[in-house]
Image (cartoon, rainbow, N blue to C red; front, side, top):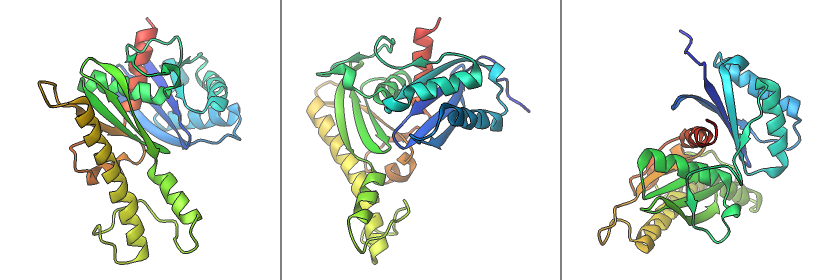
Length: 268
């Protein structure tokens, strides 16, 4: 039976490698899908891609009554805005300066914080409370921290697992490209398994190490401060996070929900 999709919000996050597209009805995520980011595509080509995704889920343009975009690829932001306009005949809200998020950003240069990090933090604080540490595993792996007062206080950025793998295989003569899956043991018995061990367990260990240091620095879970909730999202989170030693909740739709929360704050 077709779901009631009236009053649906179209949410799009433009990343360096993938475009995450989803629809939210009230606070229920109807779907979340990924398309490849391609700087050479025109607004019409993106419009066709978005329309095809909506049709797969039996959602018509008349079902959509709002749209919101976050982007870390400035040269494509206007292209995506125009593509959305072609599909749903609405001007999307774009996360950026002047858009209300409800999040106090305590950074040296708040305007430089990626919109995806802000959206993740809004959703994590809304759904899990504060303090919370958010791990987003994409082209880069970002680790964001919201303190017990609900303020965004910073974090860390490290090369993503995909970037590390590409660098390893492209800069060495005898190491091949490999798939993202863990070996049977951290002690690899052949070249491919040794690489898998380094990528999977190495990335998981890096995430654990940074989280432990953030907890130590911020005093979460000590001296009367509440412990930080740990949440992960992003395309490779389901691959990497099971091998972390910290207890981290994997939430693939975190960013899509965050876009909906921000949309609601700005559109009455």
